[in-house]
Image 1 (cartoon, helix red, strand yellow):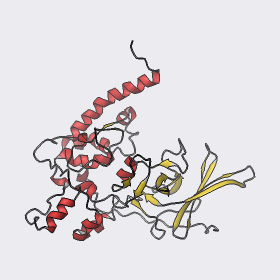
Image 2 (image 1 turned 60 degrees about the vertical axis):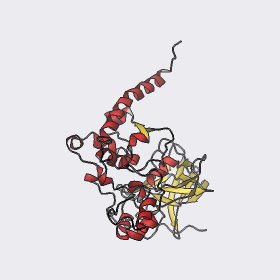
Image 3 (image 1 turned 90 degrees about the vertical axis):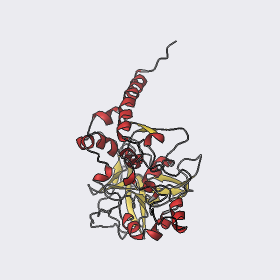
Image 4 (image 1 turned 90 degrees about the horizontal axis):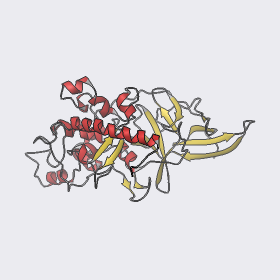
Length: 347
């Protein structure tokens, strides 16, 4: 007996089947030459050394990188350098009949949620402190809070170009208030690899601040060991990946591990934290894009930079990669904004 599906399900399955061929093509294009001898395959057994270790020998590069967007992808809130403004900062969600307000008390940023009755009196409120800022500040700054190690996203985001507070991305459709989980895939792309608690949702024993050097250069323990043992005189880059030495497909994969949006299907034994620079992306995952994302140039996903690039004439006619135009290690200044704060709230 043939299996029947509701019309909406049939349409969805048909779309995914059609898109499988589209994104298989995209993956093939991004893996051009990936099997050539120029591809540098990472050492599978190498361990992560950590940014502090990298800084001991590469302090100038490290200091510059930590001022870049990637280096500041997750940070602690600093009221002295924060670009947020607080005039007219109240945001209203009509679907939930909830008001939100950000404010600073001391060195800490807070978000307050409250509801008003017909006379304007507050009938409900809750307030939570920001633990981490997520986003470099070039486009947005969203905020994370923690409760017993569980990390969740907060309702308000500062939109840099528009210079306004508004509901966080996705919250106009579904306002999850202070309980939206930040899962492993989310944090892994926005940050260095966190100390994720297995078999949990959004629970971390430790949280780094900023995408680490090794996300693009691979685990560096063997690189460090070779230098300490004096084995790197003829090859200073031994045991670590320089993306410029990779073939085009593997260069692009370093960026695509986070800048290719869609529905991800992991290869067996793979996950958000297992990709290593030097691999082909297809060894780690398959990514399916929505029909709208493929066909409508105005509807690219929030991190569809790789898909945009692959559809450009420049990409077709040259051997360009992402870093032809974008140097991820070079700081780009964030325009300063005049900041005003509301009066401190009583304790």
